Length: 73
Length: 311
Ligand code: FES
Image 1: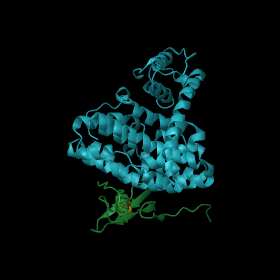
Image 2: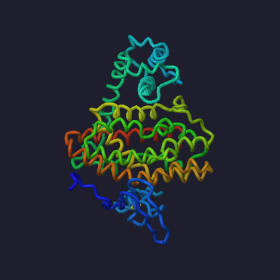
Image 3: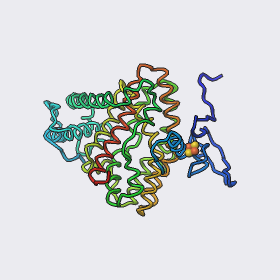
Image 4: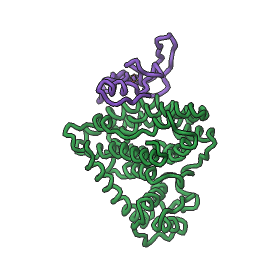
C-alpha cells in the first residue's frame, strides 16, 4: 500500500487526460506517438492542433461556452 | 557585466559591488526604476553573479540589509495591488477562478497578428531576462515543501530542465532560438534594454522564491504562469513563423504549448492543491502569487502596446 494517491492516468475535468510514464499512443490516423516527458497530457476535447497532445485549446472552448470574448488561437 | 545604473541608488550599489565597500548604503531610490534595477542586481548575486563582482558578496550583511530595505516596499506594493483588485473581493474565489477570471491585454495575440520584426526582437530581448534562467527562481522553493507538493513540483521541474537531456532544457532551447535569430545569448545581456515592468516581473519571482515565508506565493505564481502559457505560446509561435523567424525560435514556443498544457494541470492540482490542504492559512499568499504573475504580465503588455500605439 502506498501512502499517497498517485494515479498513472488522471482525467482532468473539462481538460486533458494526464498519462504518467512511458507510453505509445496511436492517433486517429493510425500514427504512433511516444511520450517524452514524465507526464503527458492527451487531448480529450478534440480541439487540439497537436493531437494526440493537449495544447490548451480546451480552455478556449470552455471560455466560448461561458460566452466570453473570443480568444482564438 | 553589471547593468547600467538608473538613478543615484543603483549607481551607488553598482559602485559598491565593484569595490566591495558596501557599508552605509541606504534603500532610498530615486524612482521605481532605480529601485528595481538595484534589487535585480542584488538578486542576481544568488543566480549567476557578475564577472566583476566578488562572489563572496552574495552573503554580505550590508547588501542583504539593503536588499531587505528594497524588498519591503516592493512586497507591500504587490500586496496593495492584489488587495485592490476586484478578484480579491470575490467570496468564492479559488485558484481556477482567479486565473480564468483575470483578463489583461495580450501581447501574444499582437505578435501573432500584427507585430513587426523589430517589435518581436524587442520582446525576445526583454523575455530573455527570465527565459535564460527559466524555472530557476521557482527551484529555490523545492526544499521548503512537504512530500506531496514537493514530488509534484519535481515532476514539472524535471521537464523544465529537459528530462535529463541538456538539449531539451528550456533555457537552453531559448538560447538556441536567440542565437538562430541573431541575438546575443549571454546571461542577462539585455538587462539594460529591459523596461521597469520586466525588472519587476523578475524581481517578484526572486522575492517569492527566496523567502520561505512566501513559498505559497511562489507556488501560486508558478501555477498562474504555467496556466497562461500554452495558448499564448501557440500565438507567439505563429507570429514568429509569420515573420520568418528561424525554426529554433518558434520551436521553443512549440515546446511550451505542449509542456505547459501538462504543467498547468499538475501545478494546479498536485502542487497548489496539495499545498493548500496542508497549509490552508497560506490561501491568500497563493492568490497573491497568482495575481502578481497575471498583473505584472498585463502591466508589461499594456506598457508595450501603448508604446507602439497598438492597444
Ligand atoms: S483537452 Fe486540452 S486541447 Fe483538448
